[in-house]
Amino acid sequence: MDNTTALTFTMTAYAVMENYKHWMFTVFLLLYLIIIILNIVLITVIHQNKDLHQPMNVFSCMLSINEIYGSTALLPSVMAVLLSETYEISVKWCMAQVYFLHTYASAEFCILAVMGYDRYVAICYPLYYHSIISNSKVVKLVALAGVYPIVVFGSFYSLTMQLGFCGKVMPKLYCVNMELVKNSCSPASYISIVGLVLVLFLVVPQVLMIVFSYVQISRVCMKLSRESQYNALKTCIPHLLSLINYTIGSFFEIIQTRFNMSHVAVEARIFLSLYFIILPPIANPVLYGLGTQIVRVHILKLFIRYKILPTLLAKAVTAA
Image (cartoon, rainbow, N blue to C red; front, side):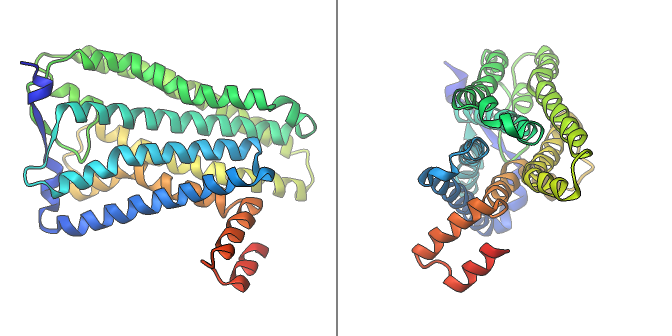
């Protein structure tokens, strides 16, 4: 009998929320709806307005699509387990969730690296921006950011998919690869080693691209006037905040996966483990929507059209 069909994992972290699981279900449902609404609004506004069809906005849309993808891989599953009596999840869904969440995390960093490169070209080579970041170049960068994580992580994950599973405990709210490996029937320490090598391919190129981009931006900005420096900084702030936010969340998750965190309160571990999948999907559409003036104007026009905001308030925010 195929044990991946018959076996389920008990998600032990849910026991902490036993006394208020219905309240937590409501919180996760609201968070999920907020993520979906914010990201769909940003995608819709950019798609419907041709003057927003700029490379940076295209990358912002891709980021929002990835946010929807990642949060959908996690939050509906969390809500379903919360409503169950046994807090169990099937092995097949657990394995699928590992793939979805890891490719989301990898793609997020790739997209942010591409956005950093876009800012570098826009600030360092403004006169040649549209010839360097041409439509064909945008398509190639979007394809690279989307396909690269799938291929690299998929190649690594094929090792985990070959394992048989005898353990039944998953000590988190969701499935991650290393916890899955710990439940295998035979020792698989080689997967941990290969996983560390994988980090080199999924992190190092992106880090180098981001560091190079901002070093060059800093070098050019030092030669600009104060007003030009301010304008350059203003275009970089949403990206920098997104990058910092996601890096913090990823750091929390990597630390928990690789090290023993039993000395930290369970509630704190749960919050830190959810940071990378909840905070960036909420913050990013706000940063690239309301934080970018031309996009903010179109969003507010949309709200006025459907009478979501009073006209005077919308005009005041637009002028800010």
